[in-house]
Structures are given as structure tokens and as C-alpha cells.
Amino acid sequence: MNHPEVVLNTYDKRTIALHWIGAFLVMALWIAGQCIDLVPRGFPKITLRSLHITFGVIFGLLLIYRIIWRRRGGVHLPVLNNGWLVRLAKYFHVFLYALMLVIFLSGVIAVWYRGVNMFDLFKIPAFDSENKEMRRLLVEIHEWIANAIMVSALLHTAVAFWHHFKLKDGLLERMRPLKNANSATKG
Ligand code: HEM
Ligand code: HEM
Image (cartoon, rainbow, N blue to C red):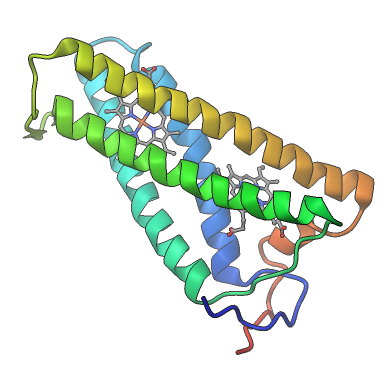
């Protein structure tokens, strides 16, 4: 991994855009996922489920691009903590990436196993439409991971605000959109 030299106290535009698009999609997909069970059967359910899957796939593709981008380039900043908290913060970011990857994969596996009617336009065939229990279990696993992401993201957000309001160390500023007009990567 070739980490570029840090020249500024802000992430680059692409890292910031990918972070916020990712954060928005995680929350929107979680809400949409919860609503699938609540809307009436037929057109509303099919449409909401199809939208959830479409944006889920967009989320997954952006995530893969983001991981490649973060490993290859972009600004990498030192963690703004002391001692063991440095390692904790780093591992927590890796953990968030792992959860995002796993939720994407669990969604794809659920779709592959149970099959889906996409927007009433085309059907993704089911690997096994008979085993109702397995279908239910796969969606349940997907939901557990989704809930784990939400709890972790809330914790992550609370820490970001703690830095901003309590420690006042400018951590939130480094992820702020439109602040990085002259940010660049060296090396
Ligand atoms: C309102 C909600 C959020 C706020 C205020 C926020 C804030 C931040 C800040 C300030 C950083 C930089 C930390 C540093 O420089 O050490 C960061 C990094 C990061 N955040 Fe968030 N975040 C939010 C939501 C999310 C969500 C929902 C996810 C994904 C589940 C997420 C995943 C990450 C990851 C993986 C990093 C590491 C940097 C990177 O590679 O992009 N964040 N966040
Ligand atoms: C950040 C990403 C995602 C989040 C937070 C998320 C969240 C959720 C949640 C909370 C549910 C409701 C589970 C339940 O109540 O039983 C759900 C259902 C579902 N999700 Fe996701 N999801 C994500 C990505 C994906 C992806 C990438 C796919 C497929 C490619 C997918 C496919 C599905 C399917 C098929 C269901 C079941 C819908 C139904 O009940 O008919 N999800 N998701």
C-alpha cells in the first residue's frame, strides 16, 4: 500500500464525496429496507424492493471503487487521538468497511437465492424458491448486519461530534465538503 505524504488537514474531494454518498446510501437503504415489509403487496412492494436492490448494487459498486481508491491514492491523514485510541480509530474504520462489504454481499446472496421480480420488468431467477426457511434466514442475516451497521455508524457519528464539540480538534472539518478547493495529494 503506497500511502501518499500528507500535505493538508483535509481529505481530497473524491474521498469526501465517496464518504458522504456512502453514508447517505447506508441510511437511505436501511430506511427503505425497513419499509419493504410495511408497504402493501403488489406494485408498491415490488417497486420499493427493486429500488432497494438497484441502489444497493450502486452502493456496492461505489464501495469497491472507494476501497480501491483509498488503497491507491487520495489523502491519508493521521488519526487525531492519542495512544491506544489511534489504533482503535483505525480498526473501527476498517470494521466499518468490512460491514459495508458484508451487507452488500449478504444482499446479493439473498437476491440470488430467493430470486426477485425487478420493477415487474424482468425476473432474477431463484436458486431455490422452495426452501422458505432458508430464504427467511438469509434476509434475517442481512437485517442483522444492516442493524450492526446502523449502530456502528451512530457510534462513529457520535465520536465525530465529540471531536468537533468537545475536543474542538477540527476532525469534522477534514471531512467537510467544499472545504478542500486546494487539496492535493503529494507522492
Ligand atoms: C452524519 C454521519 C457521519 C459523520 C458526521 C461522519 C464523520 C466522519 C469523519 C469526520 C471522518 C474522518 C475521521 C478521521 O479523519 O479520522 C469519517 C471517516 C470515515 N467514515 Fe464517517 N461519518 C458519518 C457517517 C458515516 C457512515 C454512515 C459510514 C459508513 C457506514 C462512515 C464511514 C466512514 C469511514 C469508513 C471513514 C474512514 C475514512 C474513509 O476511508 O473514508 N461514516 N467520518
Ligand atoms: C447499505 C446497504 C444495505 C442496507 C443498510 C440494507 C438494509 C436492509 C434492511 C434493513 C432490510 C429489511 C430486512 C427485514 O426487515 O426483513 C433489507 C431487505 C432486503 N435487502 Fe437490503 N440493505 C442493503 C443493501 C442491499 C443490497 C446490496 C441488496 C441486493 C443486491 C439488498 C437486498 C435486499 C433484499 C432482497 C431484501 C428483502 C426484501 C423483502 O423483504 O422482500 N440489500 N435490506
